[in-house]
Amino acid sequence: MSGPRFFVAGHGHGHTHTHGHGHSHGYSYSHEHSHSHDHVEREPEAHREPLSRGAGSGKTLFLDAFSGVAGDMTIAGLVDLGVPFQVVEESVALLGLSGFALELKPAWGGAIGGTKFDVVVADAQPDRRYRAIDDLLAASQLSSGVKGLARRIFLRLAEAEAEVHRSTLDSVAFHEVGAVDAIVDIVGAAACFDYLGADVVASPLPMGRGSVHCQHGVLPLPAPATVACLRSVPTVDAGIEAELVTPTGAAIVASVAREYKAWPSFAPDRIGWGFGTRVLPDRLNALRVILGSALPEVEPTLGATHVVLEANIDDMTGELAAHALQTLLASGALDAWATPIVMKKGRPALTLSLICERSAEQRLAEALLRETSSIGVRHTPVSRTERPRRIASVSTEFGVIPVKVSEGPYGPARLKPEFEACAAAAKAAGVPIGSVIAAALAAYTR
Image (tube, rainbow, N blue to C red; front, side, top):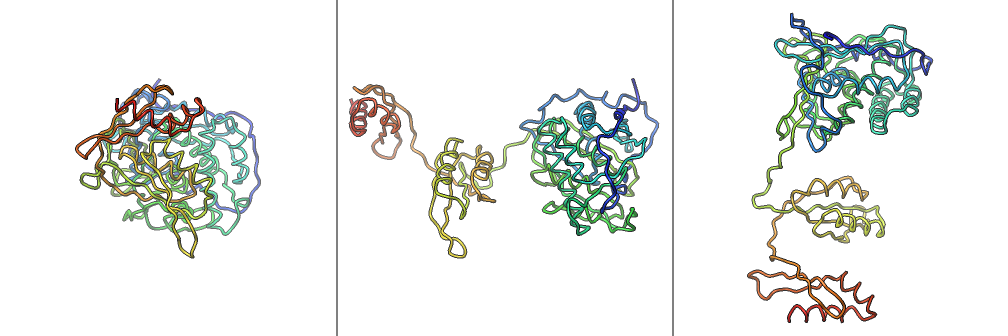
């Protein structure tokens, strides 16, 4: 088979929604372009081996949005990268919607080949309110990962629309073609990201200028809903009059990217190109997605072998703080401790700190945020001088006890029987723990 691939949605709408406050998104989902050339037609997925589920685990997926981003470009780029189109087809089919088809076809920008994705609407589509769409997603048979991500993306989009129109989430409606486009783009993109399981990094998003006509008249670019979706997302001036980032594209990127860089430090493995529709005057209209292996971070401080992570916390109980410290130690921290402090407004608080090897820095920073109520972690590179250490097991009248021996050119060796082992032996023998410690030290000396 060559040429486009189609998936036709089933019959019978599961939901019909009435009109309500909110504006059409039709302008948001059809601005992209690709160049038309005489190329040999081929199966859209024939140029590369498909990626297996979880192929992005432990890797970086970079969204190189040099000409912006939209939902259809995202799906096209990820399928071109190697995510099987079947992943999109099956996820959309689980929604039970009808009246449209999914089209996947090869596309070119100059001499660069890629993929184009479209939602081809055959039948009239009803307006759909946000609440009805969220209920549809919640009740679907989508996997928990796809469902959760799709609902987060739609919530971000709906919150942006509600803010723009000074309305509530219950009043937000997505009209006709824009509604089904948004549902397909968001669910399809969520399915692709979930399938890969990669750590997503995006470039700062380029913002076009000018204006665009939509159902409610003329709007400035970037579109108001796009700007509202991009809180805390780095943006740059694209220098051209065109809509480069759609509300759906903005909501997707803002929901999946953990950080934004012009280019991450990684070794590229796979590259995908997702093309749009319109011709831009100064750049290729495509989203480039790159899957690669992350490189070890460059040491920010010469000679730093470890890092101290800290967080100031004024709203945790001592019980929760103690649990957090134990969890951090169990997760690989070399040491963890709490220091009483006084924060702003005279509030008593704690600084939770840990020291770890540089290789465990990001993992333990995430654990510190996950196990505490802090919203930020300080990273301080440090180096430390260590005594060489080893464990020696000695036989005593209370059983075998491990003894930590710290040596090196720092004076006499330091001996420390492992406390938990001594405590267990003392309890079993019905003697004071000091007796077991003394016996272990004596046995090592002998």
